[in-house]
Image 1 (tube, rainbow, N blue to C red):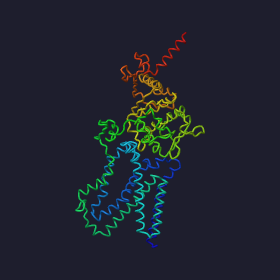
Image 2 (image 1 turned 120 degrees about the horizontal axis):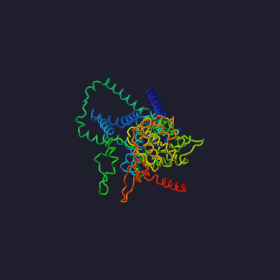
Image 3 (image 1 turned 90 degrees about the horizontal axis):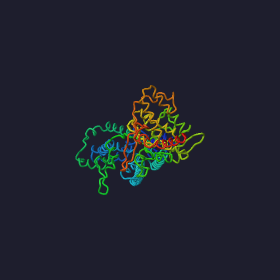
Image 4 (image 1 turned 90 degrees about the vertical axis):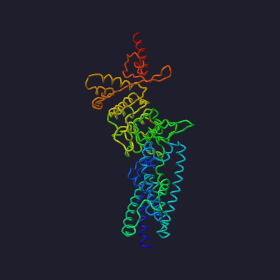
Length: 547
């Protein structure tokens, strides 16, 4: 081997070793218990914009684009720039037109975007098509790599380098998944940019006369406006075709306009942020096997609010904990008063952690020396966990991809489900914190505990006594340690409404905010019917006691 070939071989081996070690350096940590199949395959948006940008640069200019320009330069001169130029335009359209809609969908993969428009069948077939396409693309890239190595190295050495490259690529991808691919792409992007920069300086210095005579115009006799349009629609527009849905898009079903069913999607298209955070009554189904499900895992007939809520919890569990595996307690998201209440009424000193089970991170509880899987928890603990995670998402420090400040309204359906009255009181403390944060909280309930709190709240609010906040805390059996927690709470307004079905079958809402037990309207005096049984039981017992 010549010295030139030895140098080339050394650089290639060093390069492959560098990208392999860099690709798996941090991803190997996830293999020790924090890695899920979804995180392995998609990276879950956790690599940051810089690495993603470098990966995109490497993908675009690292192969076909560079070879394509090389071929077109000989034919079209400087106008060959448009091979990348139309792609840049397409990416610009993609960034400002398509990306905001995808973020609203909280989709991570292209099949998930397709599912939004075409349903589960679209998800399935687009995934199959993409997988088969990338097998073909990878095979073509390996063939191209072999041709390049054969052209610069002796046959034996080129074969060695080829198999070294194939084994290295397959091994580091298998070891680190999508994170590894993105990280090695970033390294290659740096090398490519440095190489192109060095080549540019070399060409300018060594061939300055030829460079000065080049015709630097975007169009010439070999490449006109029609050629540009053809190239744009064949190459550039492919970066932006996902944004086909506009505010004027219509859906026709069996000859009738069904566009009303896309109101949520239209709202996203118009670029508006979601202002309402919805915690549904069916929340237990979001973590039915100990982990939050992705939006696409649910049956299409599942209510949208449940699918959306579950997907938000999934994002929080994947990237909202900053690498921490403890889900409860989290010091940065719970005040000591709430933690004490949750401990006493729900967890009883237990700790909720995330552990890897068959490639998925699932919740387990460590309490009294036992390590309990999710299905062994009490009904109240299982019901409360998604509610607690919902509270995490709208309180505490800000998180990447989960902007708690965007929500003005928070709807909580039946927070009492599966909970002891003491636990419901603990939930009320968390709701009060949201109210103090300036959120408008809407709670539906079939429990008298929230209404008893509202009744006491309204009476204290009308009183002229001092230290009313501390007196209100006595409802929660808390005194000095909670002092200051409810400061300013009486500046807020709490309204109560009952839904009542009339004889004509219509359901109307009735303001029962006074909760006055002496009110002539039974719906008010009996708190929408919630206290009627207790009232009858009291009357019955009183009659017997007076005999």
